[in-house]
Image (tube, rainbow, N blue to C red):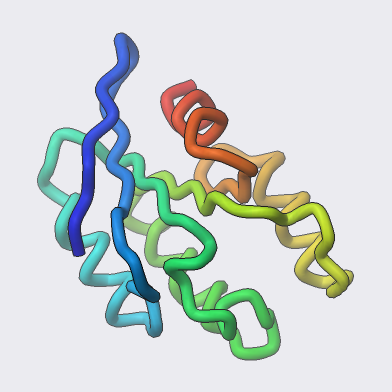
Length: 119
């Protein structure tokens, strides 16, 4: 797992850089958390295409299990991608409610994610 750090006047945000799926299961999520647990940032951006598609099927509970760990460890996460054409009503509601909160976000681009995470 490689990350780049975006530095702003209000803090740092780490962005996962990968040409393939990097988050396949709960352990991958925990590995990401561990990397940043004692670092100088608790804000991470992951692109939608770097996450296994099953994550977005809420019936698998993969999203819930992984995201709960991020919340438990006080690490903010923005998942970046196209979420406009979601056909699953439960996923649409989940994305909407997450974006109303302060810890997990589903956003359209990296710039928006950085702004939201450092808010």
